[in-house]
Length: 401
Image (cartoon, rainbow, N blue to C red; front, side):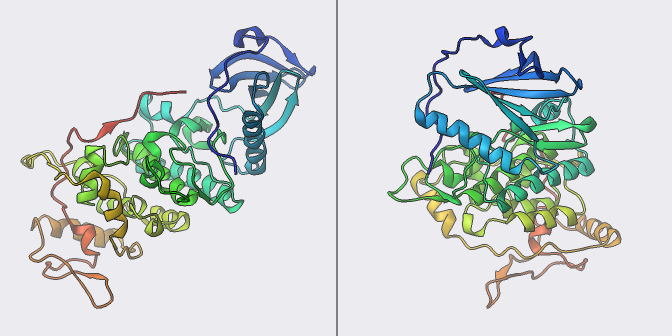
C-alpha cells in the first residue's frame, strides 16, 4: 500500500519550466504557455500542431526521484487513466515519455478552476439551481471513481476545473488517490477539506479510516463553498473553535450560514462525526435533488441575538464522544411548493417548540407540542428564526497551488 507521497524532490531537471516553451513533443504537441507549477512538475497549455486542438500537458520530472516517488507518479497516471472516460473527469489522452520527463496530455479546460470561479468571479453563490447542477456533476464523478475502487482523497475546488461557460465541471489531479478502501494514511489531503478522523495526530497502532467516508466529508465542504462562498470551519478538529461549536450543537451552522432547514438537515448527515453513520453518496445525491431550496436570504428586521459562545470540552475526548453519539436521520421528506409556503407562514407565529423532542421506543425522534403545519421532521423546523450571520464563518482559504 502506497502512503502519502514523500517530500517533493529538489528541482534537478535539465530544463527550467519556461525553457520548454515552444518545444514540440514527438512532432505533434507544442508547449505554448505555462498554466501552473506544482511540487512534482509543470502544467503547460499546448496545441496539436496538425489539428490545432488545445491540450493541457502535465510535465512530471523523472530525474532525481527515489523509486517510491516514481511509484507515486505511475500510480497517479494509472488511476487517472482508469476514470478519465467519465464526462465530469478531465480526460487523459495519452502519455509521452522522454529520458527526463513524463508528459501527460490532458483535456484543456480554459475557464480555470472552481476556486477561482467562486472567489474571484462570485459564481454559484446564491444561485441554488447552478450550485445544485455543479455539485451533482462533482458527486457523479466521485461516485464513478468509487465504483472502480478509486478514492480521490484531495477533493477541493482547486482540483475541479470549469468549462462550458461555467455550466460544466471536471474533476482533476489524482496525485493522492488510492485504491485502499480503508487507509492508515492520516493527514492526507488539504486541511480545510479533511474529515476529523483523517486528522488524528496520534492514531492508535493499526488504526485506519474509511476513504469513502473521508471523500464524502470533503464533498460537504465543497457544497458549502458553492452555496455560501465560505468554509464551515478552518479544520474539522477540536483545535478549531467553530468546529467545537458544531460538535456541541449540530444546528450551529444554520446560525452562521444562510442554510434552508432542508439543506441544514443534509449537511448534518454529511458532517456526521461518526464516519459509520455519515451519509453515503447515493443518499446525498437523492437528498440534493429533492431539496426544495438550499439557501435563503437572511431577514434583516430581526434583532441580533448574542454571539454564540461555545462551551469548551476536553479536546482529547471530543472526537471519541462524538463518534459514540447516535443520531437518527430519516429520509428527506417530499413536499409540494404549496405545503412549503404554508410551512413558512406557520413558522412566523412561534419561535420555538413547546417541548423538546424525545425518543420513541425505536430510538426515533418524535415531534411533540408543535403547532399545526404541514408534516416536517422536527429538526427541519428547529431554530427557524435565528439566521443571523456571524464572524464564525470563515472565508475560503488563500489559494495554494
